[in-house]
Amino acid sequence: ADEGTALDLTWNANAEPTVTGYRVYRAPSVAGSYQLVATLGLVTSYTDSTVPKNSRPYYKIAAADGSGNLSAQSAHATALAVDNVAPATPALSARDVPFTSGEVALVWSAATASDLSGYNVYRSTSPDGPFESVGTVSKSTTKLVATGLTDETPYYFKVAAFDTSYNESVHSAPAAATPTTSNVPEQRYENTNSAVVFSSGWFLADTWLYGTNTSNGSLHYATVGTSAQPNVSRATFTFQGKYATWIGVKAFNRGIAAVYVDGVLQRNVDCYAPGSTNDDFQWQVPLYTTNLLSEGTHTMEIVYTGTKNPAASGATYAIDVDAFDVYR
Image (cartoon, rainbow, N blue to C red):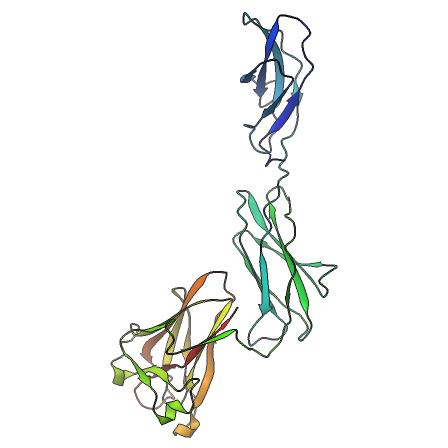
């Protein structure tokens, strides 16, 4: 087995007693210039491991005696160097997509084959199959959202890598997930968790108003009154997971926040909601959920912009961080 860069040659031994070895010659075409590629002893086989990938070289053999005299070269022989080595099998994980009906998120480890071309994804409603194709994605992608599924029905998925010669890896072990709208995270990170880092311009609020309505008795907010700097003051959450959700507040006096994931602006989130009193505050609101993320460590940044919806009252431009939910 090789990746299309080797060919095995064999020949009949020359019966003359003065023969001490053989010379192997190679050319790119039948009428090409045959160049010496190997000087051998009394053997009748050779593996040429320097073949240009997926090529069809031509070979000739000559026998040699102890004085360096060479026989006439043999008739040519040729073969196609075929890649028959598949990429390694990716490791796959699956989960339902938060806040969405009928979808499952798939993430897998990247295959490392030098000639990797892409991945095939399969699904079934039984761990034993049969599995049908969900789709094919390029080698640069290690994630996929399977859509059009039935909520509360278990699904099983497999993924396989394939190379430029269409060799497909062994399929991964099946990964199971059930699409649902229950949206239960694997872990909630409160605003006071060390995974959440606040720059200057944020204030920890744990008075009765916040203490009785927030996820864990407090939240951080950034406003004009806390000397927040537009596009500078930010909360940075570092996590590992397929999705993460920012939990905050919507109210009549709230501003607009910019949300970045892994340093890239995703969206400006308007935290305004109609009302005029504290009773109109909307608490523990999922304000933003990431798109499906690849394996590894990610960041979500909530950035104070110093802007607001024209309908928002006051000029505090406040934004809040109550917690973050992570879905693995």
